[in-house]
Each structure stands twice: as structure tokens, then as C-alpha cells.
Amino acid sequence: MTSRPKVVICGAGIAGVAAAYSLMTTFGVEDITVVDQGHPLSLTSDKSTEAYRNWWPGPDWEMTAFMDRSLDLIEDIARATNNRINLNRRGYVFATADSSKIDFLQTMSKTAEARGAGAARFHDTANSVYMPSPEHGFNFELTGADIITDRSLIRRHFPYLSPETVALAHVRRAGWFSAQQLGAAMYETVRARGATVARGEVIGFRMRANRVDTVDVAMSNGRRSFDATHVVLAGGPFQNKLTSLLDVALPITAERHRKVSFQDTLSAMPRSAPMMIWLDEQYLPFSDDERAAMADDPEFAHFLGKFPAGVHGRPDGAYAALVLFNHHGDAVEPTFPLPEEPHYAEIALRGMATMVPALRVYNGRPSRPYVDGGYYMRTRENRPLIGPSGPEGVFVSCAYSGFGIMASAAAGELVASHLMEAPLPRYAPAFLPSRYQDPRYCSALDAWGDGGQL
Image (cartoon, rainbow, N blue to C red):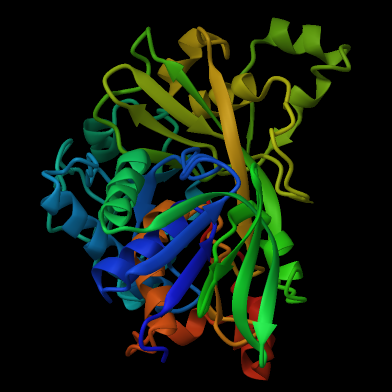
């Protein structure tokens, strides 16, 4: 290890900022430069739903342990800042109107328990003792999940869900927080400790004896070179572009994901609700007259087809709401700004109205909906890439799919530990880029599926 590391972090999203934060606060590294084309935390890090969960039923225990560590660190930041980040523990509710999915929910909960996420508790009678999650704060010790299959108990505690709901799983170490404030707290600490932030595009790396030595950056006032003993590539949607400069290919693809936020002027989204996810495929709720009118209109005929499971949403503050319905999962090339998707807001809101019928009051058209989004950069098994990759001194922190905000604290700590040659947690090998060189790992991929993506 170089006695005085000079670290250049390529990317000022949450992954890059968290890496700088851990290097400075945990390891005392002083010479850090963060390079980004845009403003810090502005590309996709501020497009998050800001939710978190430690509930990862598979493929094994590592994701749960990794996320628990991240949430421990985020809770530390919440305590140190008087909960500036507005962390709550309302949980996630996975709900279904399909009785055949009850076994799935029960099995998933038992699997998550075996992976270390907390106990699975089953409620199949009306007098079963169920403890609601608090609306505010995060000092709530209950973990694991409560699986409720008694419909009267569901109606008592979740009266806003579709009356067709037959079962749900309420995941407890879950909720949301302000991603903007978490990022700002880390970024302010990094700047206060003397990190340099350079606005520009990384255009090349230079080596000395197969070790990274210099990072070349195109800036508005010309080209500048930064000396480096170590480089962290945390480029988010531009990660493949960065690694191509080093002739390194990573097994990651991009999926475009959007969300819609709107002012809930008619109070249709319950203010005390948790994050809610509908597990069923669906046909969007339209009246017979609406269906007849759309059937012959090419612009709207696809609204009448079956949409996938997974629409989810939550209240946002005192008056707003967020809804996501990522009904396309194709791999794409990242481009900015995101191409428009006509009618996304209406599709998302109508889809969420299947789960929360009160939302039908908007008829799919709330006042002034705002659609934004970004890209899920993901591996096949939906686990991140964290660790050394390519020439000596180069490390990656990427492929955080839809869980980058919640994973950020542990991700920053892990890549910093790799860089500083510090002791690593037991879960570290599961996220190494080199895992794909292990034949046993590769043979297991087909059985693992998507690893828990919503």
C-alpha cells in the first residue's frame, strides 16, 4: 500500500461520493479528487424512490448481510444529524389478490429469514397479534416480515388496499429516507475535509508498469491531468464508457426506469402508508366505455393489454405521492435526457389504482404530474460489482440496479476497504468482478433469477 494514497474517483453520484466519504472518515485518506461531467448527485442519484429494505430472499445470505451493514451505517448518519435524512421504518408491503401466491409469500418470507433478514411471522386469524409500524422515526426493533392471510385483519390495518387483497407480506426493516439529504451529508463532509471536485469528462488513463498513474480529464478550460495511485470507477450509467478506456468489459446492462410524482390534492394516497408493491399482473382499470373508445385507437389500444406485476408507490411528504410502473425491462443504451414515454404517468397511476382504489378518483390524470427517471445498471443476477478490476490500482463500484441509494454506505465502505487493503467483510467475495471467473459461480447463475429486483 502506498503510504499516502492519491485517489481519483470517477463519478460523483452516490456511489462515488460514498466511496470518498468512507475513505476520508474511516481511513483518513486526505488526497481525493472526485471527477464528474455534471453536478454531484444530480444525474440518477436524485431520481430514486429513496426506499430501502434488508429483505433479500436470495440467492444467498450475502445481499442481506451487505444491506444490513449499509442500513446500520445510514442509521448512524441519521443519529449523528438528528435525522436530517428523514429516515423512517414504515416497511414494504407486498400484496396480492391471487390466493395461489400465498405459498410464494410464505416461502419467500421463510427464505428471507434463513438468509438473516429476521423472523417470519404468520397471521391467519382475525385475532392474531400484529404490530403496526410507526409512521415516523426509525427506532423500531421489529425485523423480518409479517405475512397476513386473514382478510379481516388486512382490512383492519390496511383499509386502503384493494378489497380483493387476500394476502400480504409486511417487511419491517424497510422504509425510505431523503436520498438528497443523505448524499448532501456525505458530500459536505468530503468537501469539508478537503476533497477536490473537478467538473469534466474522463478521457483517458495512463499507466506505469501496469499500474494506474494518471487520469486525463477534459474540462471547460482545457485538458487537465490528475496524478493517481488509485482510481475508483463509479460512473453509474457511464460505467461501461469508463471501463472501455481501460479495455475492461464488465457484464452490466442498462434498463430505463421512470417514476411519476404528483400533488395528491384529493388525498387518495394514505399519508401513513408504507411502500406498497402489487405482486399481480393486471389489466388497467378502465370503464367499459373507455375500453370501447380505445380499442379502435392505435395510440391507446396497447393500454388494454396485460401489464406485468410490480407497480409500486408510496406517499411523499404531506401532500405528494410517488408511483413507479416499470413495465418495460429491455436493455438499452443510456442516453440523456431520457426519451419521453407518452402516457407513462397515466399508465403508472392507473396501475397503482388497482392496488389502492382511491387513486381512481384521478382517472389516471392528476394535476401536473412530473415524470423523471434514470437507468438501472445491473448484472445478470442483480448483484453489484465492487472491488479491483483491470490494471493495478483500479477499483469499480457499480451495477447497483434499483438499490444504489440504500446500498451506498456499505458500498463506499467496501470499495474503500479494498483500496486500503483493510480486512474485508465475509460478504465481499460475492461482489467481486472476478466472481465470473469461478466456474461454480457461473453454473449457479441460471438458478438464481433476478435476485430480488422489484
